[in-house]
Image (cartoon, rainbow, N blue to C red; front, side):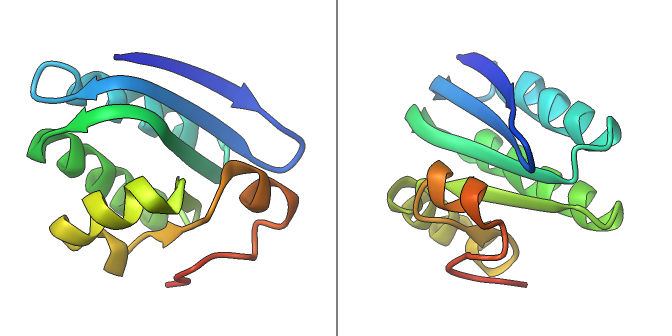
Length: 116
């Protein structure tokens, strides 16, 4: 798994590529939570490069949703195609905002498929 953090004007995009599984989920969760702790309140996980995620990967995303909410921040998953399938299976879609693409979320962070 590779992670690239890209700071934009309003949002912080965390691009994830490769497999998110039991060996890599803790690294992903730590990276995402560091961004929240650093005050990056509009955080988007770009999952377009993720080829596989296990339940450990989904747990990392869910833990990040909870961490962001407890800090009063926003955490979104993109693109919707991957996020809806993976997050829907784990019930994460009920908690996190899903956006159709990074560009849409970056241009207007108030636009989401689900707003909770």
